[in-house]
Image 1: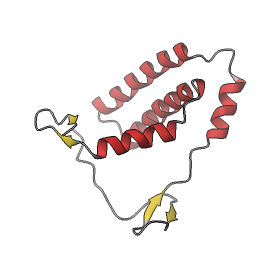
Image 2: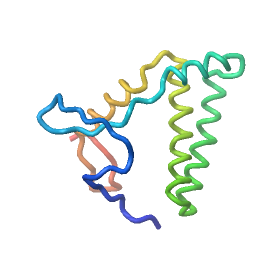
Image 3: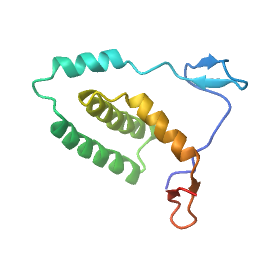
Amino acid sequence: MHEPIKTSTTVDAPYHTDRTHETQHMTRPPVDTANLHTFVADHSDVIDAQSQFNCLAEEVGELAEALNTDAPDEAVAEEVADVLFVARTIAVLHGIDATEALNTVISENVRKSLDAEGNKVTKE
């Protein structure tokens, strides 16, 4: 079983400091969306939403396997990245700004509380 996720005020990867707010926010460099758009355009003959959905299901299965077998964090990170890559590819295919959509969902979930039964995130 994995240990609980630990949080830290230190960072072990390159971050940029955003001082536009009262508090200091640490953010990673942005995702290379231009490269992703190029990838999708270059492979438009074989990439469509259905094929990517099938890939997403496969990648989620690989992530589940990594989590269920106590794979090293690096292996779990690779599977998470694969899931994100395919999900962002689907977003590109549908003209969705994945970052904007994710930020909206994060904001909505921050306003929710954990339900005592099953730790499901629910609206208050």
